[in-house]
Image (cartoon, rainbow, N blue to C red; front, side, top):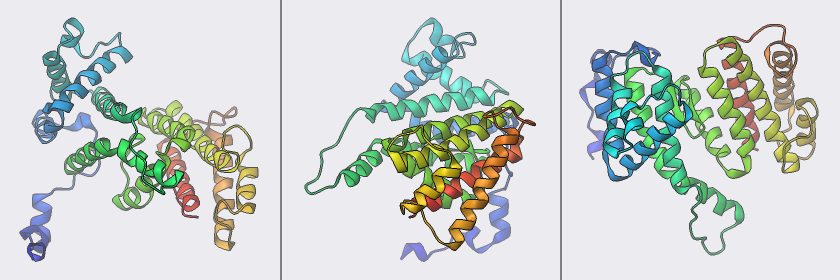
Length: 315
C-alpha cells in the first residue's frame, strides 16, 4: 500500500530538479571541502564498523606499500595502529585537496580488502547442484559484501556527480545509466567467475589505463580491451588463452555455435572486428602506432567491446 504513495519530487519535476541537482560528470578535484565531508559522512558507516576498521587498516597499509615514496598515510607509517589508519583514511578522503588519484587508489585498496576476505573460502555444495550452478553461487557469495559496498558508494557518487562507478573489475568511467545497467554491470558480473580471470585482468588494466587520462594510457586501454575480447574467445574455444586472433576466432566460435550466428549478428561482428582491427593498428600498443588514442577512441572501443561480450554471453 505505501508504495503507491508519491513523494513530492515524484509529482513535481521542478521540485525534483531543485532537490536533486544534475552536476553532469565531475572529477573529485572539483568538489569543495564541504562536499567531500558530506560524502564521508554518507559512507563512514562502511568504515567504522568492526569489519570496516580491519578493511581500513589493510587499505591504508596497501596504499603505503604500493606507493612507498609518497607514503600517503603519514601517521600510519610512523605507528601502524588502527586509530592512525582511520585518521589517515579520513584525511585522504576529506582533507587532502586536489588528489583524485590518491582517493580513488585508497578506495580501490579498501575494495580489494573486502574481496580478499572470502577469496580462499568456500560454501557447502547443495545436493544435485551442477558444477556451473555451484561456481555461480560461490562467485555471488564471494562478492556479496563487495557488491553491498559498491552499491552504496555508487549511489552516493551519483548524487554528487562523480564521474566513476565501482564495479567488480574496479573503478570505471561513468556512462549513461542505461549503458551501465544493461550492458556493463551484467557483463562484468558474468566475467567475475574464476573461469574468465584472464579476461577480467585485461579489462581491469584497460579501465586503469583509461583513468590515467594520458595519450599513452588511452592507447594502452585500447590494447588491453581488444586483448580481453581475444582472451574471451580463446577461453570459450580452447579453455585457455594464447591461440588465435579476432579474425579467426569469431568465425570459429560461430561455427561451433558458441556465439550467435545469424544475418544481423554476422554483420555486427564483421563491423566490430573491422573497427577493432583498425583501432589496434592505428592507436594501440600491439603494433607501431600511427598516432596515440584519445579519450573518445578509448571509450568507444570499451563500449563496443562490452556490446560484443554482452551479445556473446546471451547465446
